[in-house]
Length: 291
Image (cartoon, rainbow, N blue to C red; front, side, top):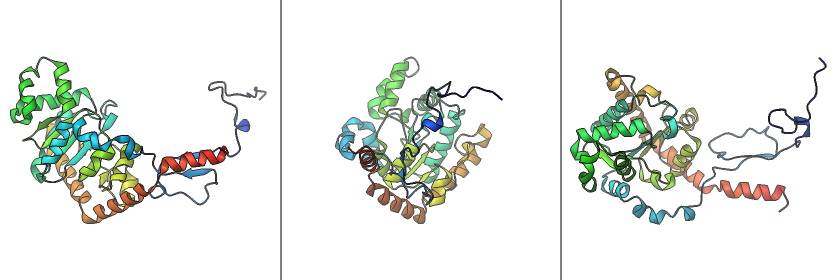
């Protein structure tokens, strides 16, 4: 066709494929115990294990003072709570009925008599729904926060500060939190992890050895979670669907709480903790570069 042959990609300006190394080093930050590594992979491709910061760098001993309200909620919980966090799914438009999500969670804590921790991930509509629920449930506020309850209507910065410290709803059974906290510290203190399936959250849940939902089909395949939930099981399209969503979520929690699933999660947690993904990656790079 007499078209010009580019030496570099006209968009990215990267060398064309024939100029690339024939065997570039490929390092995957996941565990071979979780994702099968086919035998036909070339020797330049490695599954290192998940890339975690070392515990010594996370200062776990200081977490209770860094998150006093959350730590107090964990301490007073009779049993380890259920964690739920959907990360950036809200900002991506997937939490289109935050009040419906709260109604489902209210049904869970009342039905199973289990404390829960909800990370709002600073998603404004969800935080607005949490504040609205707090106004309807005066007992939701912890002792330290009662004094600012009268200002929840008028001061957005106070609303944000309250949620960064933590706000308790539904008879102090649901702890809502908008801050950040190391999952490797928090998840081992929980009995279940319900999350959006991001690779980092999945890795932390596997590391902690607690049952989880999502990453999604793969977690069900290896036996550490029930099948993935559809979005409407957490976020009902309307108030009339709340009961159906609650039943679906309760069924998934029951599946994830089964001794077989717990045993499998604990087994994978042990294997994941024995890996040093970062160390393997660094060692491989140094070997290739003859450092």
